[in-house]
Length: 83
Image 1 (cartoon, one colour):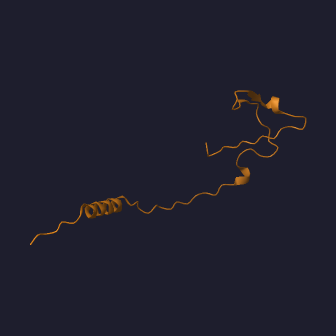
Image 2 (cartoon, one colour):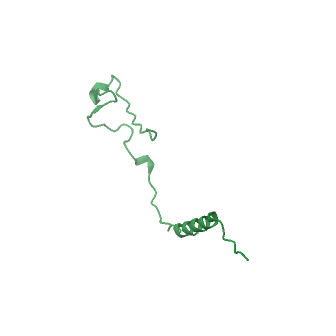
Image 3 (cartoon, helix red, strand yellow):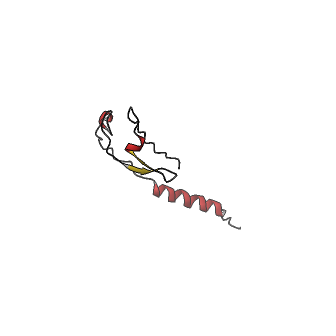
């Protein structure tokens, strides 16, 4: 009687399953994180900004004095995560 060999995809599936089981990460250890006071993070309202000189996307240089108006200036720094 002729013995039947399992198809190659059965061996591949078994190998993949064993390989993935060996790569399963161990449970992470939980560490206590300290609370961050968000009200004190970053520049505060009314805080003076140091003079700066920055170039925009067109290569034009802007300084704090060049954007300052009669009532001051409002600076918004936005960092996009979708570049």
